[in-house]
Image: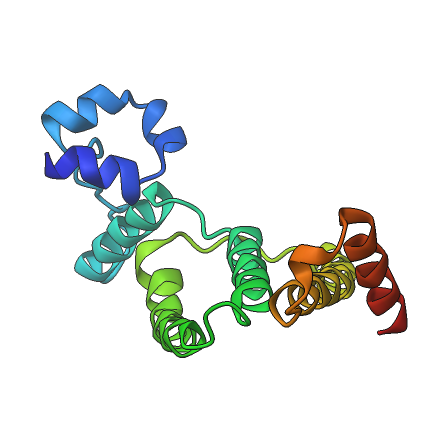
Length: 172
């Protein structure tokens, strides 16, 4: 059971698939003992370095785009649901603070570090996402104001409600 869980959550199936995942599940670690060349002075240190390299290569890759997606979804969650449940902001803040503390461990211990790549895509999409998120949150908040603080809502037609909402959105 532990090997199946390790294969699902920690190890990179692509690299182990070449060596047959079933072999890992039934037999364990597919790599044998690595022996350095005889010309190496410190054999034990070299063996440890090679074993760590294989361990690093078998892990899942740390994907920064997945982390950015998670942050963006959290931003949308806060922007859209803060008026509905303001106390939830404290729990969300606490969860984010704890998560940031554990990201370093995830990057350095659990996941495989990847080669650096260009950050142009991240910066360009982040700017567009933030602008669109603020616009959509403004539309959402004005709609909530029209509905929640209107004592005569039941007397309005749907057209009147949408008209007031549109005027408020354009005014903001």
